[in-house]
Length: 126
Image (tube, rainbow, N blue to C red; front, side, top):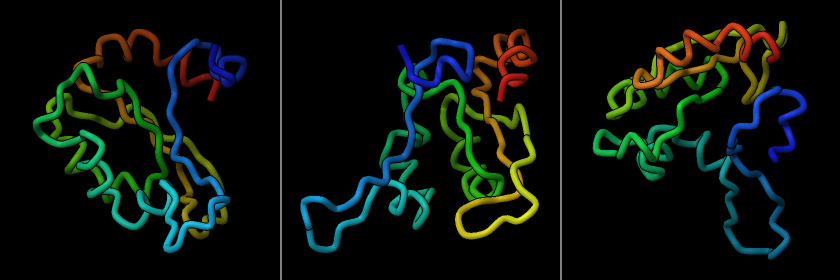
């Protein structure tokens, strides 16, 4: 069971960007989060979010800061499954660094009928 099930109230599979410390002392080490933030578009393409991706292999939902959504909207909209904004939530009055004022939830257009049915209960818990 997912450790966040008690918070999300749904047993769903989740993946988060990793940012482990360089315990192996690898030279020029870059964690996954740094790679993503340096070029979100390239990271998405390298992780099968391209226009030729198989819809079954793509997640039904993505959650990110609104600043990243602006940078990745075209790539995510053009993938075969397509993503649309399905929620926006206030995060902070004082955004800094990688953190934006809002967090956005994107839903695959393929699953929008399911999202519309369950979004009220799902997003109420966020």
